Length: 209
Image (cartoon, rainbow, N blue to C red):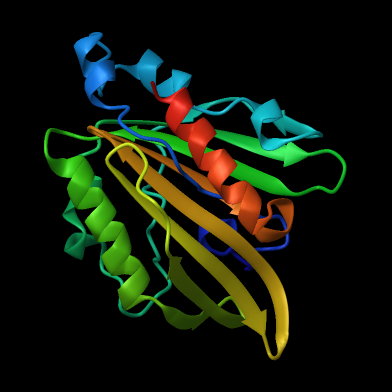
């Protein structure tokens, strides 16, 4: 049975994870917006119109899987990445573009004290250990891209699947850490330009304030 590739790297992909703002953790905590408050996490999710015209949001889902898991990568073992066991709350919104059928997703997670920064490091190690591997009838590859830190930390990744010499799908995957919250956006590469990535990061960070 065919299974959808990880991180929405398939014909129906998701939007990108992108970030560029500063200092959004201290003010949030001083205002009493604790990192494990569900309504605060839901409030950090982007509205569909933020992604551009034609995007429609789906119902929210909670207790979502860790977004950087690569279960089909031979080098991936979930027990090697401990932070995902310390995320008590997570909420995700999915998006569909009515015009072209593209799909995106945005996930906001809270971590136990000290574990959000570990989660970013874990994500980087997954991308390094599973930089290239074969699955779903093709070759999956990831590349960490340079990006300015937003809030406390940022991570931007370009991922793609190729079958033979043909590029079948590609996406930007991005996370920002603000205190003990991590916001991750998954966007198909054809839905955002390189220049537009920074703008989305700004909006993600502003939404988490």
